[in-house]
Length: 114
Image (tube, rainbow, N blue to C red; front, top):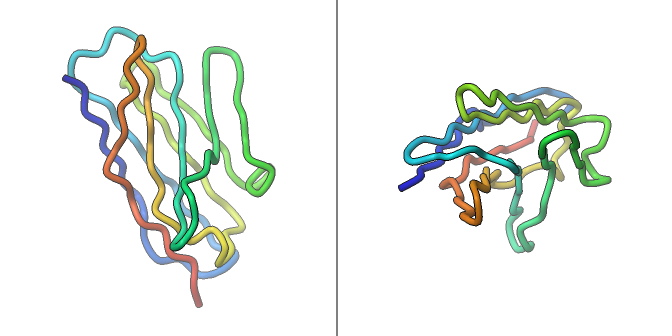
């Protein structure tokens, strides 16, 4: 069984920064893709950033402000968020893909407000 746990959410003022962390544990036999999604109130879940072996992807709305990074030795992925704006307020979810299995975390709330 594989578990995924996010941390690092919270309340931040507009223009501020936060770093989200995600750690996977359990019976993991290599992680090929690690993703961050977010879901704002009343909106659909959207892909924010993705890292695979040798490539990364960012949604247009966060490109240049967010940075995804991974620590393969510890089965971890991070999302450094800068220049946060109220429209970034959402629950952020981590998803990892190991083999054909996709596992979600429980989410961490990020609130951007003055």
